[in-house]
Length: 487
Image 1 (cartoon, rainbow, N blue to C red):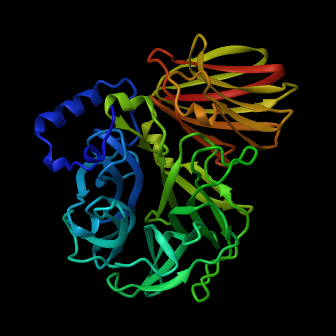
Image 2 (cartoon, rainbow, N blue to C red; image 1 turned 90 degrees about the vertical axis):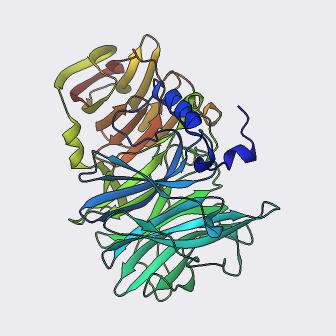
Image 3 (spheres, helix red, strand yellow; image 1 turned 90 degrees about the horizontal axis):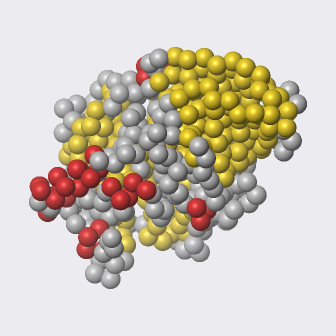
C-alpha cells in the first residue's frame, strides 16, 4: 500500500467508525501480537514520552499514528501502571489540534509541579511549502487525568545557529530552577543539544549549547536525557548519522550515552568520556528515563527503528516498547537490569542442568517466557541458546570463547526484517562464565548479559509452533544451569 502525504496526515477524528473498526480487526488477527509488552491498539507506536510517577501511578505516553503502520500525524497516547508491569490504556492524551502542533505532537517529557504533571513536548508544523517549524509546548495534566493545552507555545523560536531539526525536550529540576535539554542540529548539519532554564515552567531562557567532546558526531541528536546517578552525570541521546565501525553502530540509527562528572550548569560543560551504545540488538531507539519514588532510575525504550518495514505492517500495526530497566553505574558504565517487579509475571517454573559436549539438547518449550541461564566454558569454542525454534527455524544467542564475543543471530528467526542491515549483532565480552537473562515475547526478545553489562533487544517473527528452547556446545564442552518461567 502506498501511503500518500494526505493519508499520513489524516486525523483520527475525521475517519468514520467503521474504518477504525476494520483497522483494529486486522490487528487482532495478527499472530505476532505481544503478551506482556506495551503495544498500540492499531497503527504505529514509536518514542516513549512523558515517563513519570505522578499521583501514585507511573505514567507513560508514546508517539502514535493510529491509522496505519507508518509515520504520519502523531498523537500522544497515554498508558499508566501502579507497578511498571500491568499497564492500563487510558487513551489519547494530546491531539495535534493547535496551530503549534498541527502536523504532530512530537516527543517530550514530564515533570510534577504544584500537584500537576507538566508535559513538555515538541509541536511539529509545516507550511504550504512543507517547510518545518518546531515549537516547544507545555500541556498540564491534573490529578483527574484531564489535560489542558496552552494558547501559545513556551518556546516559539529556534535559536540562532540551529536548523529546524530542534525537538524532544527533556525537563528536570535542580534546586529551584527547571532545566530542559533539547535535541538540535547546527547550521553546519552536525548534531548537538541545547539547554534552557525556567523558574516556573512557563517562561524559558536559552542558556546555550551543551559542551561535550563530541563536536562532530552524527547530523542530529534526538531524544536527549540528562540525569545524575550514583554521583555521576549521565547524558543519554540518539545520534543520527553514525557510520558503522566494526561491531559498533550497525543499526540505521543508534542510542547511547556518555558518562562523567556532573553537568556544570554555569558553564554548560559536561566532562565526558567515550560514547557507549545502550543496546547491541537490532531494534532499540529513543529511550527515556524517570525516577521511581524510592530513587531508582528506570529506562524504557522504543522496541523498533524508523525507516524499516516490519512483518506486522501487513496487519496495520507496528512496534512496541521495551520492558522497564533499572539503571546503575559500575566502573564508568551503565548497567541495565530488568526491574524486580517483572517477577510478578512468572508462572510455572522449570529447571535444566547439564554438561553438554558437541551437541544440541532440547531442554524446554515456550513462546512467551523468561529464561535465566548461567554457562561455564570447559573447553568449548562456542556455546549458547537456540529459542523460538523448530526444525531449522531458530533465534540464536551464543558466546564465542575464542573471539570473546557475544553474538545474536536472527538469520533463521522466521519472517525477515531489516536484512539490509545484517542478520547478526555482536560485541566483545571476556569471561569464562556467561549469564544470559532472556525475556521472550511472541515477537521480541530482550537479552541481558552478565546482569546488564550488555543488552540485546530485537524483534523476531517466528511461526507460532516454533517453541523449542535448546542449549548447545560446539568444539568441546560447556556446563549449563537454566531456570525458565512461563509468562
